[in-house]
Length: 93
Image (cartoon, rainbow, N blue to C red; front, side, top):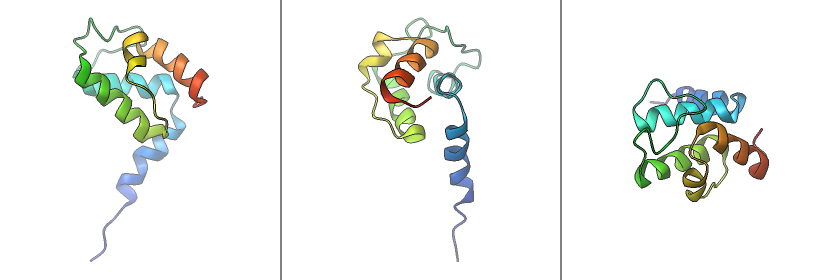
């Protein structure tokens, strides 16, 4: 019996083709449980806490292979601001 790994390869391929901003908006939507997250949604105002901040950086690391400090989520609490810093400092654009 073989395991079909094609299903797990799709998200990684999709993430690589997705802008950092779009990726982060999707991650924020998932971890905060909100469908209406935009580039300007504030992490704190949307109910974010330390656990969700760690989930955001963990998912970003899985998708892009970059180890982003969780403190950046607190310092740049919107997907738009965080995407700019990640692209500039980690070259993921």
